[in-house]
Length: 151
Image (tube, rainbow, N blue to C red; front, side, top):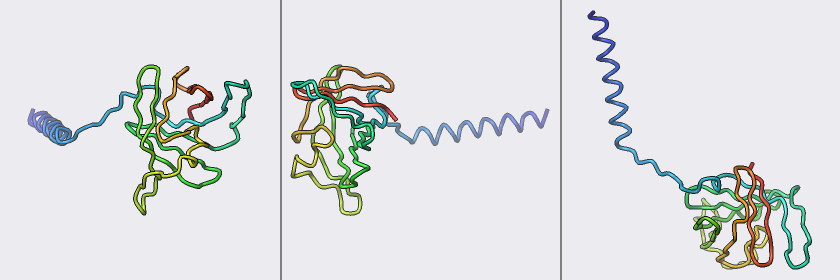
């Protein structure tokens, strides 16, 4: 009986400690659903001509998490870029691009041409979400359509 009381006391103490530790934490969650993840740009369609550019062998990625998108070109290793974004049911707005440079500090992008490999034409780009599944996404502008696969 004494042994049982000791075990119950230890279990209650452990539960109390865990509750106290977790009560001091705030968990940040994301409402991005299927958008969150690491996306590979695999193709770009030109709407006016119907042409397609296969990018499946290129290593162009969008990493979506919480309130930021990290865009990276693993072939050219020029820069990684950070964007803020707003996600609604049928639109994705990316804006406020920064060069992702931890040692020197993230600096605002001053040349929009650096962003074109990622399908960004200006410092603020709005896409129509034509498809968003757990492993596939299609984003479109008036000129281009981007096909992504989740890694």
